[in-house]
Length: 455
Image (cartoon, rainbow, N blue to C red; front, side):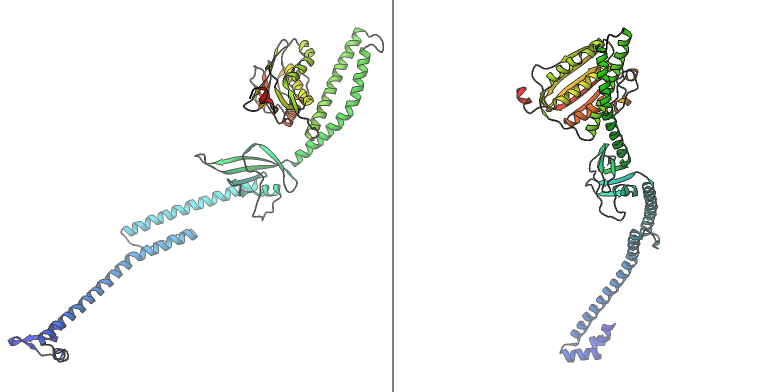
C-alpha cells in the first residue's frame, strides 16, 4: 500500500503521479517505473527488519520466561549450600516444576542428615570432653585432628594452642611410657583407625597418667633395696653360725638337733637367695647393672650350670637331657650374668618338674637370624593361658599346686627377663596345660659366629 502510494499505475498504463515519485524522478533522474521499483525494494527491506526484530523480541521474552526460574533455582541452591536453609521456588507445572520439586526433596534430606551429623558430632565431643582418660586422634602424617581436655591436661598443653605434638606416631598395643612437658609420666596405647576396606586413616591414642604408679614403684624399689641390704649381713651371720654348729665346732649334735639345724640352714639359705634376688632386681630397675659383653660359648656355660645344679636334680631323681651342637655357639654376653639367666631357668624347670621327671636343654645357632637359641623345657603341669601373659612380672606366681609348693619368690623369671633385655635378646614361653613349658631365649651371635659355622 505504501508502495502504491508512492507510485501506482493508473488508467492507460501510466503511473499515478505522486509527490514521492515526482521527487525521485526529478532528484535521481530516473523514470517513474524505476522509482516505483526502488521504493518497493526499500519498503520490503524495512518490513523484513521489523519482522526479525519482532521475532527477536518474542524469542527473548520466551527465553526469559524459561530461564528465570532456573536462575532462581540456582540461587536457592547456592543459598542452601551456604546457610543450610531452603526457600521454595515457584516454577509451575511441567518438567521445570518436577526438577524444582526433586531439588527441594534433596535439600530436605541434606538438611536432615546435616542435623543428624551435627548432633552426632556434639554427642561425640561431649563424651570425649567428659572422659577422664586422654584421647588423641592423629592422621597418617601425625597431625592431631582431635584431642580432648583430659589429654591436653595430661600433656601440659595450653587449651588455646593450635599446634600440638604427641610423641606417638605408630600403633602401640602394649603401651609406651614417656615423660610429658609437665613432668608427668604418661602411658600411651594406640591403635590404627581403619575403614571397612582396610585403608588406614590415622591413629587413636589413649593416654593414662602413670605418675603416681611410677612414684609408688620407685618408693617400693627403694624400700626393698634398703631392707635387702639390712637383711643380708645378719642372714649371712646366721647361716655361718649354723654351718659351724652343723660342722661340730660347738660339740657333737644329736640327730634331732642336726635335723632342726639343717632346717634352719635351708631356710636361711632361702632368705639369702631371696635377698640377693631383691638386690639384683632393684639394681636392674635402677639401671645400675652394667654388662661386659664378650664372646662366650653357650655350651660351656650350660655344662657348668648343669653340673652345679646336679645335687638339686639328683635329690628329685630328675633326668636332664642336654643337646648341644659339636661346634661352639658364641654369643655376645656377660658370662656371670648369663650364667645367672641359665641358673634361674634350670632352677625354675626343676621346681616345676615332678620327681623322676625329665628336663630338656637345647642350644643351637640360627645363623639366618644372627641369633643363638637356648631352649629349656620341663615336664611339669604347664602354664595356663591367663598366667602366661603375667609370667615375667615381679612377685607373680601361678595358681597351680606346684607353684604354691615350690616356695619361690616370684622374682626369678623377672630377673631373667631383665637380664635378657640387657643382652639385647628376647625370651618367650610356649606351654599348654598338662604338657610342660618351654622357655626360649634368643641372643645375638658373636661377630665370628658365621666363620665358626663356615659362612
